[in-house]
Image (cartoon, rainbow, N blue to C red; front, side):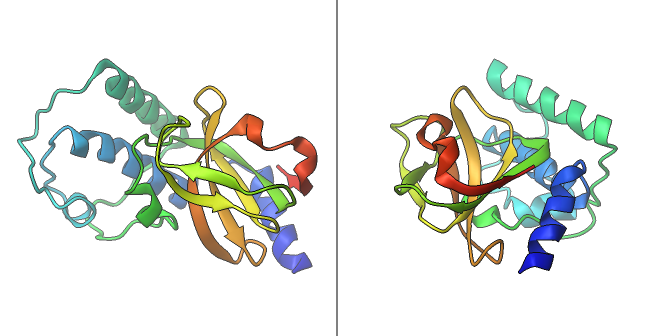
Length: 188
């Protein structure tokens, strides 16, 4: 267990946009255009997004969606991301959860973690508002990964049981709902 925690802490100390971070950014950027009706031509795009209801290669994005896509492209360029779109699988552990989201999170270059949450259960939501449907929760003993940019007081997190062993939930939480002393320890 100590080796696993040490490895995780070393990972947190360095920028986290290796392949998995680039896959994450690729997914979010393409999920935004998929929701606008984009038709994917690449093997990866067709494997991840089924093209059902697509309208073409030129789609209109809302100003907010366009800002998100531009932000993601800038992060991808800065990190030198090059996702192989000939492959048919992304390396994203929480992909099934992410497909349920109303509001898509954008991966941050750095991550931090709550090691052993000790407070009351916290609802994880499909969007960054208290009115969004609950899709999971953080419970006592969970390890909570913070690896995405926040939106106001809201941040997308993943909750893990057995240390970092098993992903059990993900979603948006109100950052102000987790007292700093509710974690046995913090990493990152």
